[in-house]
Amino acid sequence: MALLDQIGSFLNPPSLLIVLGGSFAVAAARSTATDVARAFAALGPLMRARPEADAAAAVRAANAVEAVAELKGIACADRVEAAGRFLRRAAFQLANASTPERFALWARFETDERRRRHRAAADFWSAVADAAPAMGMIGTIVGLIGMFMRMNDPASIGPSMALALLTTLYGIILSGIIAGPIAGRLERLSEAEIAWQTRVLERFEMLARAELVDLRPALRAVT
Image 1: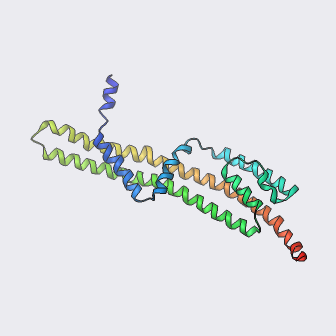
Image 2: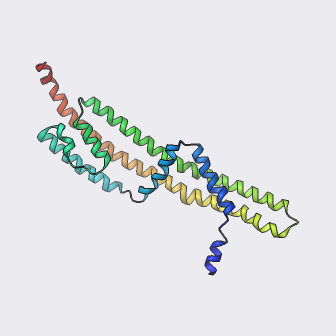
Image 3: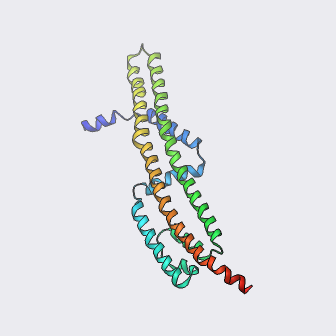
């Protein structure tokens, strides 16, 4: 019970409202509604993500696609069983590519869009981390003002001082222990994911060029 009482002494709803509400409101104001939803959705795979395992699976899938392409052509690339929505989409685009340039254009667009979405999610949490200390300082100032305005009432000094100190504490915790590390991990996961996806798309583009470019002289002869 003593431990619970000590923990309870660090809980101050007004301080939490100022820091959490203010920080998330500032971050939301700097983002779109879609970006906010994406930022919270990213919390799901945040700890489950295994970029090394994903990269290894992508290499196996790319090897399988290359093997099929050598035997049957890239039109059969989407018949390869690939784990993950990205790999399935890439194989589908490769199988239906009319020219290597069209596949390369799709690959660049896909990579840029993924990078933009990842950046937006990380930026939201970076904005929370940036705003949290300021919200803590605002709460501190509010608490100090309340304390100085009621110096003749000793009973009111304690709550005002608690508001002043706990908002600073909450701001530091939210910025340095929660939002900041989340933003940093999202950035690292994004870099790792974009890296292996780019390597896969480059291999697929080489397959498209090897087959479709070789077919061009024959197609021109037929026409």
